[in-house]
Length: 436
Picture (cartoon, rainbow, N blue to C red):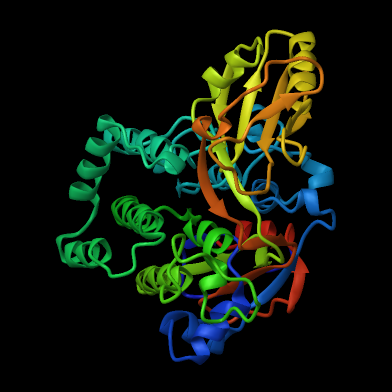
């Protein structure tokens, strides 16, 4: 093994701050903001990680599998979010730790399967269909977060999800933090606030479970920073480009990125105070997008597939614009692929969907990039039904502000001798050696 650390800290935590741009963090630090980030960066520095060169492979659900397994994409071949569930040949770091006799726990690990024997706790990410482990409330919360995140574009929460989230807040949030949540809920700037509250809740759940079980190795993954960069990076005080978000989308006086980074700074401070070894990683990062791109999401996936004549077994929404369709056989999948790829807009004839065919399943992205008006229709080049008033069947997700870049960042809360740049896969070995 390459990196053996001798510190007084016997337990370690991997904090995944997905896709954060450290250049922006440093920019805010120079303005006198983000004191915990500023202290850690100034004291211990940070490392740049490198990953894949092909843009299509610069997806977080690919890069975090690399962190969890120590394998590059060419070695693990996990291309879709959720693929990890069927890949029992891939041993993840929590399983490796467990085999070493260590207690482990995880909250929202990205594209990770729960194959543990006796985890202290395991709350899956909202998009990976793997079972949670823990108390009945942990299991209910996992389902509620999944529903909340996947229905985000429609601003819809089911009663059972509301009940689970409220019960979780009453159980896992210390009374001393109630004022913090009140301040979040009543903050002047509301853009991105639901995402900030969600990550704050996940952090409180993690802290509660960590203090209860004290696992040797555990992980907390937070995605709201990535979400906010994707959607509101142009509003950042650090952004120097020329593109602007419309006032109806995000008022110019608001800076949602600073809001989530401020929340992360507080989370970092609380974790650091526990006297553990912290490993903070981003997987990759985002840089500003260079033109205006709209994101759209189907509202009712099953209804739409039935309307255009697709025969399928099941359909599951994924992140943002994506969804997965499974079929009884390869022939039905191929027929569906041809139908979906045949659709273009009646106006500018741009493609509507992009499809990845895996035999008896399709991973589909709604890729139309422009604004969609009420009279917008889509047509098929192979005779499938024309869909008029398509806007009624979709929800606006966002205007794209940030795009992926293969460089990521990694830092700690202790002195180390790591190189200033390393392959992302190497982080796995560092983590594996982190527990004494």
